[in-house]
Length: 185
Image (cartoon, rainbow, N blue to C red; front, side, top):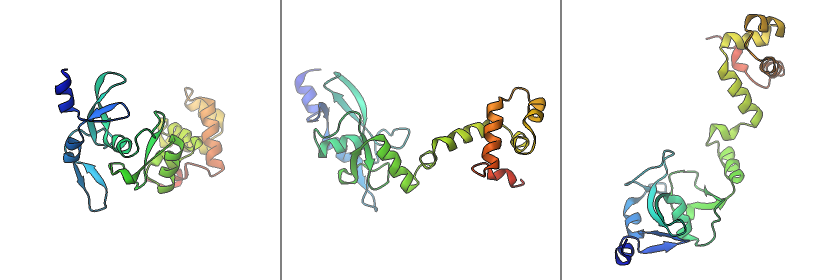
């Protein structure tokens, strides 16, 4: 690419990224809540606005999330590669710089847990494992795990691992999981 064409296409730079700020600002609209959304252009599968940038370190054109770029514009040099962007307003589509902060993945997950934004963030690892196990089996099998001895379950369904039967029946007995089994459809 010729240098003059490059500068006209990507006149602005921050942290090794070249972009067109005027073009980005033309795609952003302020919402009634005060958040800024990218309303024109590409969207990430999780709803984030996307921006086209040129990465000087990799010498490549690529798509970049708008909220990450806006944070870097407002706070140049402060975002490390392993850090995530935390939406202080709890709106994942927002790209307003004063609604954004930097933090680790665990901080982001903790915020999601506190604000109950994500179902998986509310669960502990044991609960996630229990739910994954539950999806493998039918309601009839789950009730058998609860009511029958392990030998009877294995006789009826020999392909089910003993570890799953023990884990699920223990969680049911202790009242830690699967309370929905008592509800009749």
